[in-house]
Length: 318
Image 1: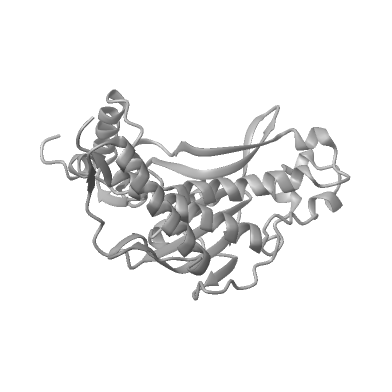
Image 2 (image 1 turned 90 degrees about the vertical axis):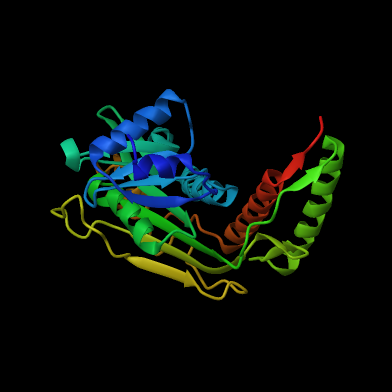
Protein backbone atom coordinates (compact mmCIF):
# COMPACT_ATOMS: atom_id res chain seq x y z
CA UNK A 1 0.00 0.00 0.00
CA UNK A 2 2.98 2.32 -0.30
CA UNK A 3 2.25 5.59 -2.10
CA UNK A 4 -1.45 4.77 -2.40
CA UNK A 5 -3.47 7.88 -3.27
CA UNK A 6 -6.57 6.22 -1.84
CA UNK A 7 -4.94 5.40 1.49
CA UNK A 8 -3.47 8.92 1.68
CA UNK A 9 -6.93 10.41 1.12
CA UNK A 10 -8.46 8.22 3.81
CA UNK A 11 -5.73 9.20 6.27
CA UNK A 12 -5.97 12.96 5.86
CA UNK A 13 -8.41 15.06 7.95
CA UNK A 14 -11.78 15.23 6.19
CA UNK A 15 -14.53 17.76 6.70
CA UNK A 16 -18.07 16.58 7.29
CA UNK A 17 -19.88 15.72 4.05
CA UNK A 18 -16.58 15.34 2.21
CA UNK A 19 -17.08 13.38 -1.02
CA UNK A 20 -13.84 12.60 -2.86
CA UNK A 21 -13.44 10.37 -5.91
CA UNK A 22 -10.04 8.70 -6.25
CA UNK A 23 -9.03 6.61 -9.30
CA UNK A 24 -8.35 3.11 -7.97
CA UNK A 25 -8.70 -0.56 -8.80
CA UNK A 26 -11.21 -2.77 -7.05
CA UNK A 27 -8.39 -4.66 -5.32
CA UNK A 28 -6.91 -1.41 -3.95
CA UNK A 29 -10.34 -0.39 -2.67
CA UNK A 30 -10.74 -3.75 -0.93
CA UNK A 31 -7.30 -3.48 0.71
CA UNK A 32 -8.06 -0.01 2.13
CA UNK A 33 -11.52 -1.15 3.16
CA UNK A 34 -9.93 -4.04 5.10
CA UNK A 35 -7.67 -1.55 6.92
CA UNK A 36 -10.67 0.57 7.96
CA UNK A 37 -12.55 -2.51 9.15
CA UNK A 38 -9.57 -3.69 11.20
CA UNK A 39 -9.43 -0.26 12.82
CA UNK A 40 -13.20 -0.43 13.43
CA UNK A 41 -13.53 3.04 11.93
CA UNK A 42 -17.07 4.17 11.14
CA UNK A 43 -15.84 7.18 9.14
CA UNK A 44 -14.59 7.86 6.61
CA UNK A 45 -16.59 5.36 4.58
CA UNK A 46 -15.51 3.85 1.28
CA UNK A 47 -17.58 3.08 -1.78
CA UNK A 48 -16.52 1.85 -5.19
CA UNK A 49 -17.84 2.65 -8.65
CA UNK A 50 -16.88 -0.29 -10.84
CA UNK A 51 -18.14 1.47 -13.97
CA UNK A 52 -15.86 4.49 -13.61
CA UNK A 53 -13.08 2.68 -11.68
CA UNK A 54 -13.04 5.16 -8.80
CA UNK A 55 -13.15 4.74 -5.04
CA UNK A 56 -15.37 7.21 -3.19
CA UNK A 57 -14.23 8.53 0.20
CA UNK A 58 -17.02 10.05 2.30
CA UNK A 59 -16.65 12.01 5.52
CA UNK A 60 -19.04 12.06 8.45
CA UNK A 61 -22.47 13.27 7.29
CA UNK A 62 -23.51 16.61 8.74
CA UNK A 63 -26.84 16.91 10.60
CA UNK A 64 -28.29 18.67 7.55
CA UNK A 65 -27.29 15.76 5.32
CA UNK A 66 -28.45 13.00 7.65
CA UNK A 67 -31.61 14.71 8.87
CA UNK A 68 -32.97 15.50 5.41
CA UNK A 69 -32.39 11.96 4.15
CA UNK A 70 -34.17 10.53 7.18
CA UNK A 71 -36.96 13.10 7.05
CA UNK A 72 -37.82 12.46 3.40
CA UNK A 73 -38.01 8.68 3.85
CA UNK A 74 -39.83 9.01 7.17
CA UNK A 75 -42.44 11.36 5.77
CA UNK A 76 -43.26 8.95 2.94
CA UNK A 77 -43.65 6.08 5.40
CA UNK A 78 -45.82 8.07 7.81
CA UNK A 79 -47.98 9.41 4.99
CA UNK A 80 -48.71 5.84 3.85
CA UNK A 81 -49.53 4.77 7.41
CA UNK A 82 -52.16 7.52 7.58
CA UNK A 83 -53.83 6.55 4.30
CA UNK A 84 -57.43 5.40 4.84
CA UNK A 85 -58.91 2.34 3.16
CA UNK A 86 -55.69 0.34 2.90
CA UNK A 87 -55.31 -3.00 4.67
CA UNK A 88 -53.14 -2.58 7.75
CA UNK A 89 -51.31 -5.83 6.95
CA UNK A 90 -50.06 -4.24 3.72
CA UNK A 91 -48.73 -1.27 5.62
CA UNK A 92 -46.87 -3.58 8.04
CA UNK A 93 -44.54 -4.61 5.23
CA UNK A 94 -43.03 -1.12 4.96
CA UNK A 95 -39.65 -0.40 6.51
CA UNK A 96 -37.10 2.42 6.41
CA UNK A 97 -33.32 2.23 6.54
CA UNK A 98 -30.31 4.54 6.38
CA UNK A 99 -26.72 4.23 5.12
CA UNK A 100 -26.87 0.65 3.93
CA UNK A 101 -24.12 -0.74 1.72
CA UNK A 102 -25.01 -2.64 -1.45
CA UNK A 103 -22.72 -4.50 -3.84
CA UNK A 104 -23.63 -5.65 -7.34
CA UNK A 105 -21.53 -7.10 -10.15
CA UNK A 106 -18.55 -9.43 -10.14
CA UNK A 107 -14.80 -9.10 -10.00
CA UNK A 108 -13.09 -5.82 -10.82
CA UNK A 109 -16.30 -4.41 -12.32
CA UNK A 110 -18.37 -4.80 -9.15
CA UNK A 111 -19.77 -1.67 -7.53
CA UNK A 112 -20.33 -0.97 -3.84
CA UNK A 113 -22.48 2.01 -2.89
CA UNK A 114 -24.32 3.18 0.20
CA UNK A 115 -27.79 4.67 0.00
CA UNK A 116 -28.55 7.62 2.31
CA UNK A 117 -32.10 6.52 2.98
CA UNK A 118 -34.57 3.99 1.61
CA UNK A 119 -38.11 2.74 1.87
CA UNK A 120 -38.20 -1.04 1.55
CA UNK A 121 -40.97 -3.64 1.57
CA UNK A 122 -40.63 -7.06 3.19
CA UNK A 123 -42.34 -10.04 1.56
CA UNK A 124 -41.93 -13.79 1.88
CA UNK A 125 -39.52 -13.62 -1.04
CA UNK A 126 -37.35 -11.10 0.77
CA UNK A 127 -36.84 -7.36 0.95
CA UNK A 128 -37.66 -5.17 -2.05
CA UNK A 129 -36.16 -1.69 -2.46
CA UNK A 130 -39.00 0.67 -3.40
CA UNK A 131 -37.82 4.27 -2.87
CA UNK A 132 -34.20 5.42 -2.52
CA UNK A 133 -33.07 8.84 -1.29
CA UNK A 134 -29.70 10.52 -1.83
CA UNK A 135 -28.71 13.87 -0.31
CA UNK A 136 -25.71 15.93 -1.33
CA UNK A 137 -24.44 18.97 0.57
CA UNK A 138 -22.15 20.91 -1.78
CA UNK A 139 -21.64 17.67 -3.72
CA UNK A 140 -21.51 17.80 -7.50
CA UNK A 141 -24.76 17.16 -9.33
CA UNK A 142 -22.95 14.57 -11.47
CA UNK A 143 -21.87 12.46 -8.48
CA UNK A 144 -25.33 12.69 -6.90
CA UNK A 145 -26.91 11.68 -10.20
CA UNK A 146 -24.60 8.65 -10.41
CA UNK A 147 -25.51 7.57 -6.88
CA UNK A 148 -29.28 7.74 -7.40
CA UNK A 149 -29.01 6.15 -10.87
CA UNK A 150 -27.29 3.16 -9.23
CA UNK A 151 -30.28 2.64 -6.92
CA UNK A 152 -32.73 2.87 -9.81
CA UNK A 153 -30.86 1.07 -12.61
CA UNK A 154 -28.83 -1.49 -10.66
CA UNK A 155 -30.85 -2.07 -7.48
CA UNK A 156 -34.12 -1.51 -9.41
CA UNK A 157 -36.02 0.68 -6.99
CA UNK A 158 -39.29 2.18 -8.24
CA UNK A 159 -38.37 5.81 -7.72
CA UNK A 160 -35.26 7.69 -6.64
CA UNK A 161 -35.29 11.07 -4.90
CA UNK A 162 -32.18 13.25 -5.00
CA UNK A 163 -31.80 16.38 -2.87
CA UNK A 164 -28.88 18.67 -3.73
CA UNK A 165 -28.00 21.54 -1.36
CA UNK A 166 -25.40 24.10 -2.38
CA UNK A 167 -23.75 25.91 0.53
CA UNK A 168 -21.50 28.80 -0.51
CA UNK A 169 -19.52 31.57 1.12
CA UNK A 170 -17.98 29.80 4.12
CA UNK A 171 -14.49 30.82 3.06
CA UNK A 172 -11.73 29.88 5.49
CA UNK A 173 -12.82 27.59 8.30
CA UNK A 174 -13.00 29.34 11.71
CA UNK A 175 -9.98 28.92 13.94
CA UNK A 176 -10.04 26.80 17.08
CA UNK A 177 -11.19 28.60 20.23
CA UNK A 178 -9.49 27.61 23.48
CA UNK A 179 -11.05 27.84 26.95
CA UNK A 180 -9.58 27.31 30.38
CA UNK A 181 -12.47 25.21 31.69
CA UNK A 182 -15.37 23.16 30.39
CA UNK A 183 -17.78 25.61 32.04
CA UNK A 184 -16.26 28.52 30.09
CA UNK A 185 -16.57 26.56 26.87
CA UNK A 186 -20.21 25.66 27.58
CA UNK A 187 -21.10 29.27 28.38
CA UNK A 188 -19.44 30.53 25.19
CA UNK A 189 -21.21 27.92 23.09
CA UNK A 190 -24.58 28.88 24.61
CA UNK A 191 -23.95 32.51 23.65
CA UNK A 192 -23.02 31.53 20.10
CA UNK A 193 -26.11 29.35 19.80
CA UNK A 194 -28.36 32.19 21.00
CA UNK A 195 -26.85 34.55 18.41
CA UNK A 196 -27.10 32.04 15.59
CA UNK A 197 -30.68 31.09 16.47
CA UNK A 198 -31.70 34.74 16.17
CA UNK A 199 -30.00 34.92 12.75
CA UNK A 200 -32.01 31.96 11.44
CA UNK A 201 -35.17 34.03 11.90
CA UNK A 202 -33.90 36.67 9.45
CA UNK A 203 -31.55 34.47 7.35
CA UNK A 204 -33.51 31.20 6.95
CA UNK A 205 -30.96 29.97 4.40
CA UNK A 206 -27.85 31.46 5.95
CA UNK A 207 -25.28 32.70 6.29
CA UNK A 208 -24.85 32.18 10.05
CA UNK A 209 -21.93 34.24 11.37
CA UNK A 210 -20.26 35.35 14.57
CA UNK A 211 -18.16 38.40 13.80
CA UNK A 212 -15.91 37.51 10.87
CA UNK A 213 -16.39 33.77 11.34
CA UNK A 214 -18.94 31.90 9.24
CA UNK A 215 -20.37 28.74 10.80
CA UNK A 216 -22.77 28.02 7.97
CA UNK A 217 -22.61 29.62 4.53
CA UNK A 218 -25.34 30.91 2.28
CA UNK A 219 -27.57 28.26 0.69
CA UNK A 220 -27.73 29.45 -2.91
CA UNK A 221 -29.59 26.54 -4.45
CA UNK A 222 -31.77 23.62 -3.47
CA UNK A 223 -32.52 21.05 -6.17
CA UNK A 224 -35.08 18.31 -5.61
CA UNK A 225 -35.34 15.66 -8.34
CA UNK A 226 -37.13 12.37 -8.95
CA UNK A 227 -35.70 9.54 -11.04
CA UNK A 228 -37.43 6.55 -12.61
CA UNK A 229 -36.28 3.72 -14.83
CA UNK A 230 -36.77 4.81 -18.43
CA UNK A 231 -36.49 1.36 -19.95
CA UNK A 232 -36.56 -2.07 -18.29
CA UNK A 233 -33.65 -3.08 -20.51
CA UNK A 234 -31.43 -0.20 -19.31
CA UNK A 235 -28.00 -1.54 -18.28
CA UNK A 236 -26.84 -1.09 -14.67
CA UNK A 237 -24.34 1.64 -15.55
CA UNK A 238 -27.03 3.92 -17.05
CA UNK A 239 -26.94 7.54 -15.87
CA UNK A 240 -30.54 8.70 -15.74
CA UNK A 241 -31.96 12.13 -16.34
CA UNK A 242 -34.49 13.35 -13.76
CA UNK A 243 -38.17 12.87 -14.54
CA UNK A 244 -39.12 15.87 -12.40
CA UNK A 245 -36.92 18.70 -11.16
CA UNK A 246 -37.79 21.39 -8.63
CA UNK A 247 -35.12 24.05 -8.30
CA UNK A 248 -34.94 26.91 -5.83
CA UNK A 249 -32.21 29.24 -7.06
CA UNK A 250 -33.13 32.20 -4.87
CA UNK A 251 -33.54 30.76 -1.39
CA UNK A 252 -35.21 33.85 -0.01
CA UNK A 253 -38.45 32.32 -1.26
CA UNK A 254 -39.48 28.75 -1.94
CA UNK A 255 -40.94 27.79 -5.29
CA UNK A 256 -44.08 25.68 -5.45
CA UNK A 257 -43.31 22.00 -4.93
CA UNK A 258 -46.27 19.59 -5.26
CA UNK A 259 -47.18 17.52 -2.17
CA UNK A 260 -46.44 14.24 -3.98
CA UNK A 261 -43.42 15.43 -6.00
CA UNK A 262 -45.42 15.08 -9.21
CA UNK A 263 -47.29 11.84 -8.57
CA UNK A 264 -45.32 9.55 -6.33
CA UNK A 265 -47.96 6.92 -5.70
CA UNK A 266 -48.76 4.11 -3.29
CA UNK A 267 -47.79 1.72 -6.09
CA UNK A 268 -44.25 3.13 -5.97
CA UNK A 269 -43.94 2.00 -2.36
CA UNK A 270 -45.52 -1.48 -2.43
CA UNK A 271 -44.70 -4.37 -4.80
CA UNK A 272 -47.29 -4.87 -7.53
CA UNK A 273 -48.31 -8.38 -6.47
CA UNK A 274 -49.16 -7.11 -2.97
CA UNK A 275 -51.66 -4.54 -4.23
CA UNK A 276 -55.30 -5.61 -4.22
CA UNK A 277 -56.30 -3.28 -7.04
CA UNK A 278 -54.80 -0.85 -9.52
CA UNK A 279 -56.93 1.91 -8.01
CA UNK A 280 -55.07 1.61 -4.71
CA UNK A 281 -51.72 1.63 -6.50
CA UNK A 282 -52.58 4.89 -8.25
CA UNK A 283 -53.29 6.71 -4.97
CA UNK A 284 -50.90 9.69 -4.64
CA UNK A 285 -48.63 9.80 -1.60
CA UNK A 286 -48.93 13.38 -0.38
CA UNK A 287 -45.90 13.62 1.87
CA UNK A 288 -44.21 16.86 0.86
CA UNK A 289 -45.26 20.04 2.65
CA UNK A 290 -43.35 23.26 2.19
CA UNK A 291 -43.72 24.43 5.81
CA UNK A 292 -42.52 21.08 7.13
CA UNK A 293 -39.56 20.96 4.77
CA UNK A 294 -38.46 24.53 5.43
CA UNK A 295 -38.76 24.12 9.22
CA UNK A 296 -36.77 20.88 9.23
CA UNK A 297 -34.20 22.39 6.86
CA UNK A 298 -33.62 25.38 9.14
CA UNK A 299 -33.37 23.27 12.30
CA UNK A 300 -30.86 20.95 10.64
CA UNK A 301 -28.88 23.90 9.27
CA UNK A 302 -28.66 25.27 12.82
CA UNK A 303 -27.58 21.87 14.15
CA UNK A 304 -24.86 21.69 11.50
CA UNK A 305 -23.56 25.13 12.41
CA UNK A 306 -23.49 24.24 16.11
CA UNK A 307 -21.71 20.96 15.42
CA UNK A 308 -19.00 23.00 13.72
CA UNK A 309 -18.86 25.31 16.74
CA UNK A 310 -18.37 22.35 19.09
CA UNK A 311 -15.60 20.91 16.89
CA UNK A 312 -13.70 24.22 17.08
CA UNK A 313 -14.12 24.71 20.85
CA UNK A 314 -11.37 23.13 22.99
CA UNK A 315 -10.56 23.06 26.71
CA UNK A 316 -6.88 23.55 27.43
CA UNK A 317 -7.08 22.44 31.06
CA UNK A 318 -9.18 19.72 32.66
